[in-house]
Image (spheres, rainbow, N blue to C red):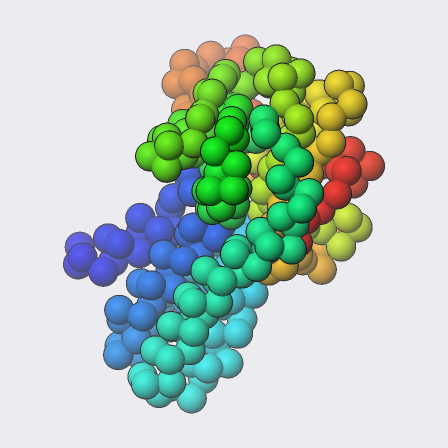
Length: 262
C-alpha cells in the first residue's frame, strides 16, 4: 500500500479522534495530493462514505466539490490552505465569544476526546492556571485517555476516571462541558455514548451542562440513527445466550442542556 493510501486509511478509520481533528488531518492530506485529480476524487468519495456521520466533514466535502469541479491545482491548494487557517481561527473565536462564561469555572467534567475541547481547555488554562479537568475514560476505545495525555502535555491538571464514576466527578465540578459530533435541527445534540447519563448526573446535582462546538457541527437532521460497531471491542467472548451492543454515539435531549456554546 502506498504511503498516501495508508495515511488516508488512518484518517477515515480513526475511532478515537473527534470530528474536527479528523477533518483537519483530511484537509492537510488533500493539500499534499491536490496535484492528482483522480486520487483527490477518490479521497472525496471514500470520505463521504466512511465519515458520513460527521456533519463538519460532510459540509466541508460539499463545498470542496464545488471547487474541485473545475479542477485547478493552484486554486484547490489556495482553498484548502484557507480552510485549514479558518478552522484554527474558529476555535479561538469560539473561546473569545464564550470566555466570560468559561472563566467562571475552575473544575470541569468532560467525556471522550474532542479537538475543540482540547483547544478550548488549553486557552482556558492560559487564563486560569488553577483549571482542573475530570475526564471519563470513554469505553470501549478509551478516548478519554487520549485527551488526558494531551492535557497533561500542556500541564493542565487532569483527573481520569472510569465511566461509572462520572457522578463522583460531577459532584466535585463547577460545570460539565462536552463537545458535539452533531447539533440537530430540533436542538438535541449527538455526542459520545455516556454523554446522556453525564447530563442526567448534572441535572441531579444541579450543575450546568454545556455543549461547546463550532458552527459546522449544525445539521438539518431532526433524527439521529446510531451505527452499531463490532462487539469484539467490548468483549470477544461468544455465546448464543449473550448479546453485546456497541454504539459510539448517542443523542442528548435539549432539555438537559443548559446552553450550547457556538
